[in-house]
Amino acid sequence: MSNTISVRRKSTTLQQVGTITMNLSCIDAQDNNIRLSDKVQVISSNPDHPNSVYALAQAANTIPYEILVKIDPKIRREVV
Image (cartoon, rainbow, N blue to C red):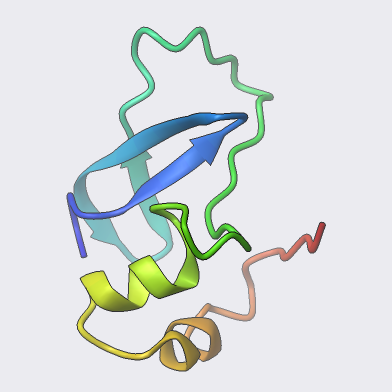
């Protein structure tokens, strides 16, 4: 899934770059005026967004359920 997924900050889509390793990935945030404390949305509840669980499943060639159940339990979740 490296270099194929994205996250959202407000209404801006930011591309993931490089290799995803363990629970770490890099996002291309240049030219977006982002600070260290800014929040990004990793998985969108909107199925039309490129970072929805449906888009992630399609990028991984699997089903959305598998994406959700494979999220490491150590990763903090915030449902909004």
